Image 1 (cartoon, helix red, strand yellow):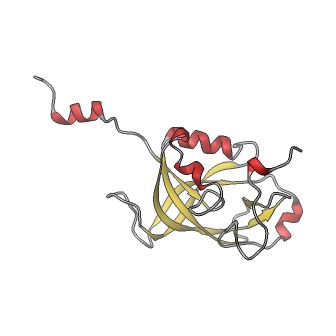
Image 2 (cartoon, one colour; image 1 turned 180 degrees about the vertical axis):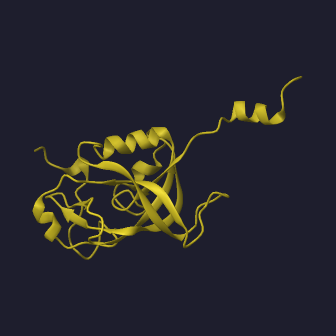
Image 3 (cartoon, helix red, strand yellow; image 1 turned 120 degrees about the vertical axis):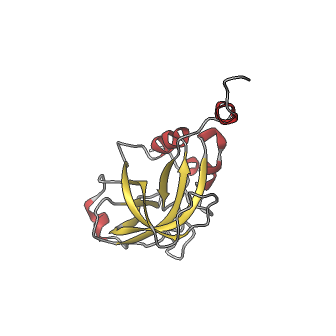
Length: 174
């Protein structure tokens, strides 16, 4: 193998994959109805990084007859939203864009987050209290009365609010 370094052989066998950070705050979190989508290798790759909350306040509401959590893109109102940061590959990011109907229903924007714990693995795990950036899905397309709804700091599909999420597979055709 004259002319090859061991590093070039490793990189050619195990190419470096670009990973973006995504902040999830609703049904895609651990223990929530759509979490399985994050862990399905057919959708791409997702690695848990840390629990975090938004630096800016946003209204997180539960709306429609399906009790969907919507993060309204109205910075400065509502609460600091708690969620999870994941590193995702391009395939997963494309899948999440499709799932969130981006850019028609949701927009993928960059948000600043305060890390609450760095439980992920590896040297790139952010430290508690640090500020990091990640993509977040929020919407500017909502009914005006949604701004009058109760806002939540943390979403739980099974929470005491009694507004249980209706999965896509269980929804009636409209």
